[in-house]
Length: 166
Image (spheres, rainbow, N blue to C red):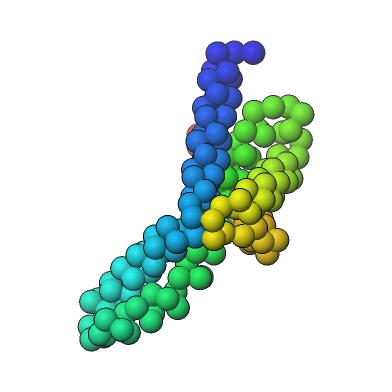
């Protein structure tokens, strides 16, 4: 095995460990902390829309829209973090001959298992709960991330083949 292969494996593994730690960190926050972060983000979004489109919303309306946006934004964030996790898992799977036969399948399974363990972990955090529907949402995010990766790798390969022929 070449040095380059080892470096690549270590880099993918490091990215995986760091991203899983990031997910763990966010899941380890108490419900009140997590909710405050979400509300802050959605409030700033509502504020931005108010300014951009000169809507003239008052404080109460801004908070109402922020609360309305909170749930979909949180779920979109979950899907995004698991889309990234699945892509990093895909990169890891492609480093090993045994896993590289079906890397998309292994990446999806790995992301789904991590989602399940993450929800189990949340059972022990104040104000949080472990939900099977969240495992499903996370798994859908992983699937969508893998679909994007498949498209991006296909385009990359086509460009690479095109320039190699020149």
